[in-house]
Amino acid sequence: MNPTARTGLAWLAALATAASVQAQSARDAVYFTTADNTISRALLATGQSQAVVTDKGTNLKGLAVRYDGNDLVTILAANSTQGGDVRAYACPSPTGPCTALGSVASLKAAVAVTLDTAGNAYAVNATKGGPDVLLYLPRNPACAASPAPAGCLPGGYGAARVIDDQVNGVSLVGDVRVVPGTGSFGASARYAPGDVLVLAERPARILAYSGTAIQAFLAGTGPQPVPTTVANISDCQEPEGLAVFATGELLVAT
Image (cartoon, rainbow, N blue to C red; front, side, top):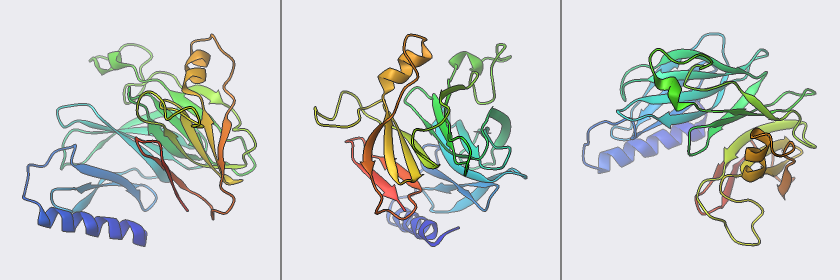
């Protein structure tokens, strides 16, 4: 674990000490990847962390967490191996281990995954000298039935769709995020709620795919979306992480 992550856990512990003890809930937890093939959980109520997934043969990078109600959590994690993929894990308890559900989509050197408000997922990979892809994973609520309908993939997803088979002008991708919120951020804004932002490491920049254009493309009524440049951030040293606030501001980790 890197020093920054250790500092974050120490802060959680201090917060828990100052607060009154509360019942542990799946909503009061933070999930993060550590040491190649492990996913850990930190409980806000106690500040303690524990490994909940150990998936041998993986190199787990970015992840996204979906709360499904009744303390059930589904994790999607990017497996950044040569034959990489996006994998799903089910966590039926806020304190117990999680179960591997299997591969949702093949994606060589997958590095990041994110969710929109409906639970649909977007994933990107980082292949030096190879194609950098933006992938869409549609969630299908009907897949929660037992037995699941034909065509359902682990985690309750349908077959992946390629939004962009080569992110324009980029040689290495670092992260992906769906812009939260509703409405717009004003006439001068370069992106809006529902848009998909891709962080590029080389060259360092932030790109935006219109959410409206993506939906038209998926419905077969529009062309393949072309991203616009939100910001050139060439002064950043190897940007690797992107966060989007509900009010529209961006935070880049380098």
